[in-house]
Figure: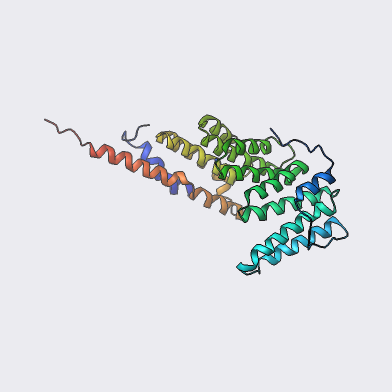
Length: 289
């Protein structure tokens, strides 16, 4: 059924002859206790010292939950207190590595949402340097996103490649990293490198939604160069690769179906085909003598 829904974009290309042709952080040298105090940037004034890192982290989480009930006028002060509470985890309990890393990451999230890029980068870098596994990967992805949004595509690319090459990161995180590495390469003008990154996910990814995104980016990259046949071919490969997942009678199957129907290349390709046809018509057809 999905093939028939998306078929018009492909038929326009296949009928007649009118159409032609997305360095790792260095390990800390100073002892973790000293780096924790330095990274906190301030004393935890107004934040009580709890008996354990877990209790300290729980206190910060409670403050974060309470932020949702704050008025706009109170939000800035409460946000600052919550960030301070997360920093207090590594200030008061610097040897509790896991809670300290999570606290730095959560502080970074709050600072990022508040528009404090420098503060957010400092927290995410600390989490990436001191963390391992998922929080290290997530922190590096956030570093990449901050650089990318600021137009620093080379720095973003390095952060994404750090995640892509991290064997301790989950497959989902590595696939996200390859998708965003492709986007960064595209912005840097390295289209073939971008396509190589997206192809990794499209052909070998385990998450069907990530694969659809990768196929979409690949198809759009051909469309951007005026290669309508290449874009249509990539769309066709996507449909063939994901049809089995889309036909599953499950929540995942529904998500895959929706993702296929939301592919940007479907509408873009149809518009490009229409423009190509209009261009051919406007030139007219020679009258027979």
